[in-house]
Structure formats: C-alpha cells, structure tokens
Length: 149
Image (cartoon, rainbow, N blue to C red; front, side, top):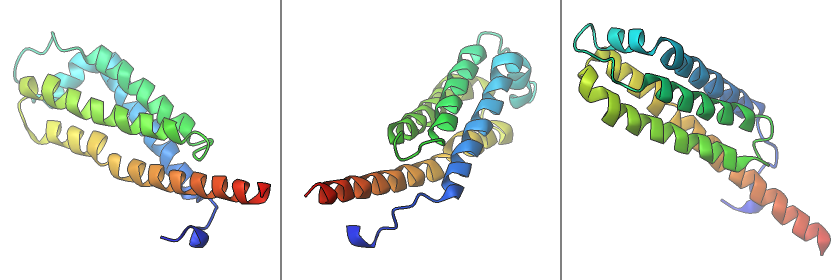
C-alpha cells in the first residue's frame, strides 16, 4: 500500500476495541485471581483435584496484561509498543493455560471455550490494531520529516 494513500487518522472504534479487550481481560483474570479454585473446578466439570494449580498467579498476570491493553487505548499510536506487549501477554496466557491448566482440567467444552474466546480470539483485533497503529505512526513520522525539509 502506498504511503500517500494512508488516512492518517486512527479510527475511534479501534480505541474502543482496545478498551473492551482490556476490560474483558481484567474481568476474566479477576475471576482467576479471587475465585480461582471454584472457577477451575467448574471448568473441569467437577473432575480432579485442582488445588495445586496457580490460579492466583495466572489471574494476577492476566490483570496486568489487561491493564496494559486498556492503557494502550488512550494513545494507541504513541504507545504502539504497549499494544504489542498486550499481544505478547495474551499469547503467554494462552500457552500458560494450555500447558499449565488444560492437562488437569481435561479438554472439555468449558476449557476450550476459555482458551478460544478469552485468549485466542482477542489476538485477531489486537494484531490488526497494532498493525494499523504502526502504519499511522510511520505515516506521521514521514510527514514530520517532509515538513523539516
């Protein structure tokens, strides 16, 4: 795509998606932080002893990831690397859940739902927003360089 055809504005719905993704991540992570054993027991459909799983740490990490994504919505072009940090955090939580929780929970509709809809689906809009932010940032940098000449 030619840089001259880029619209230099950052659509407001992207900011709304970042806010929503951050709040959604914070909310689900809070369940893990404060209701972890009960949530895991529900996700396991009553099977197995899940007391040793680190749900509080998982929830704390998720809250931090959610806050990073939420804060990135305020200045998505300037703080584009916060969006990348949020993407990285979502990937880490997906891997952590898959390797750390899923074997004990056994794969069922609840654990798969959590992995897909709370971790993986959010990667698509976050990556698209990150790429658009980079595009706008590069365009603005090129315009600044042209004005200096």
